[in-house]
Length: 116
Length: 113
Image (cartoon, rainbow over all chains, first blue to last red; front, side, top):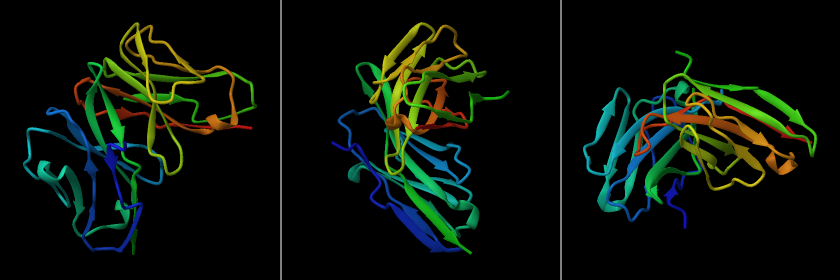
């Protein structure tokens, strides 16, 4: 069963629009971690944020904000006033314990295109 | 502080050839892993290591071997390359097994003909 679902395969918006990337996860663990990573066209993977399962506070970092809701098993990512440089593939990932080890389970990614 | 480095950046192999993808980190991270990224499939874990001398299989280990003789290095060996192994390979390291963010190398783009 898919554990991390990013239902939006591709999103295209015009610069300065706000955009929300959805992430829905599935886990039986009470302790887990959620992540967002960015992969720009250059190909590297950049860590953006980590959230643990006991901290449901929303986080804001500049134009980026994250909404973690355990009730709906979602960890959505919003970019306010998008810019062309935000164009990238964004991955959501879940870290949960498997056989006493933690492994990252990745969503398939959402390709975000910001048009000038 | 170079972070996570990978060599080579690009490689073309013929079916049946073997090679080693190099990965090194200078952050003294215990946890290292190898992923492959294929179009539309996100990242899939090949092998990982929780410390020197300890390795384990991930989701797609067949056709690959790893070893971890030092904390810094985690090479990935392709035993007999197949076209299905054409992919982009990423190495990553983390300071914490329990949910630490992973820091990635720049990737190796491998083509097997």
